[in-house]
Image 1 (cartoon, helix red, strand yellow):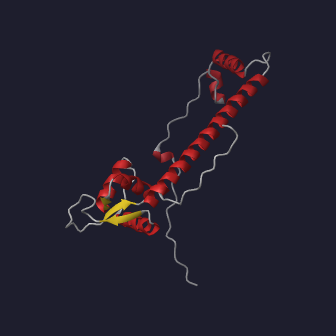
Image 2: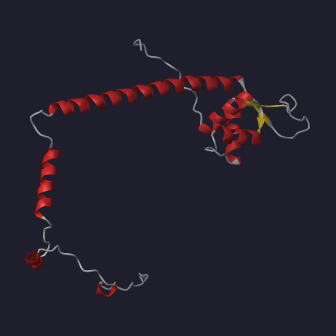
Image 3: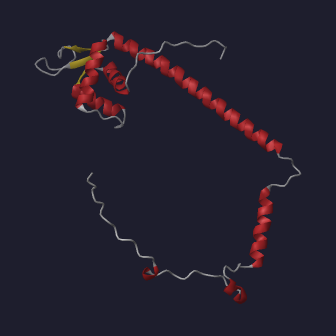
Length: 193
């Protein structure tokens, strides 16, 4: 980067539903059910809209001037059809262009931050390894030596009575009758004051 900060105007606040509706309508004017199916397909079934959500978003977008209703005959539909056909306006295209520029800038910013973090982590781990002097043995061989000594000694008795026998103590299996009985549950009475 040359040191100049790229400034991109913050786009209008778009919900992800409005974003996908604008993307779908960018290619072809559609009616409500067509928009629903296209959004589901565009998002690989990750975003399934309810009719209330879809039509509320269309109403908001129409109010902002991002979409408008077109005659069915101009959109390639039957002129006698009673469905409302929606198409993106030039303002809607402008909003998508602003969103595209802003998202590209944000993606670059995230990639730079992740790259910087990876670089910092790798340099800090290298610095940590260089702090360990070569004459100091790593703790792993010492632990291995202790493990080998324990194995050579054999099993350690867990009970005084087992010391004479040299056998390892095992806990006897518990039987249901040996358990402590549970207290019966009591009903909580409502107190009257």
